[in-house]
Length: 124
Ligand code: HEC
Image (cartoon, rainbow, N blue to C red; front, side, top):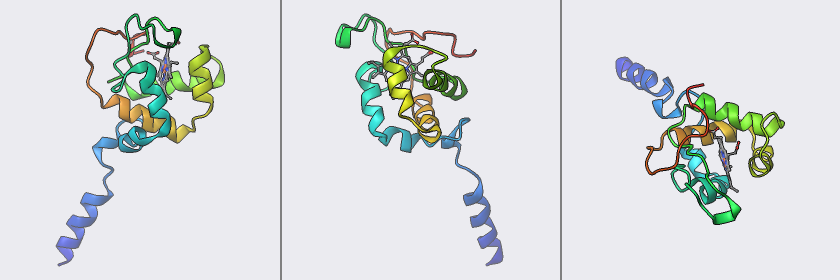
């Protein structure tokens, strides 16, 4: 009996892998109302848009499968104004640290596809 309790405890206290490197919760990131806004430009799975005329935009970078630490750094840079882009700054300013980590986990778990490219080397 004790052994069963121990197995149960050890399995459930280890953080699930789905939480990823940023500590974010991918399922929560998917459900964020802001994710709907993200998908308008970056596509439903974060694979971006190439030459999109939607919302006066040209290329919108791919954010799927990005290393979560890079994603979090980018969003923090928009939020603090270190990195400038009118649309991204307005959105990032409304997000909490947790929401940014959750979004990082959700987009980080998506598969890359399509023709859009990453803006910067996601490994930097
Ligand atoms: C109105 C269109 C639009 C919306 C909505 C939008 N983005 Fe963006 N996003 C862009 C554009 C354009 C860029 C490239 C900006 C630049 O030059 O830095 C970008 C850049 C980014 C980057 C940096 C990519 C990189 O490789 O450096 C991340 C991360 C990102 N967006 C995440 C999000 C998230 C998360 C949301 C939803 C909260 C979102 N975006 C909503 C258009 C949008």
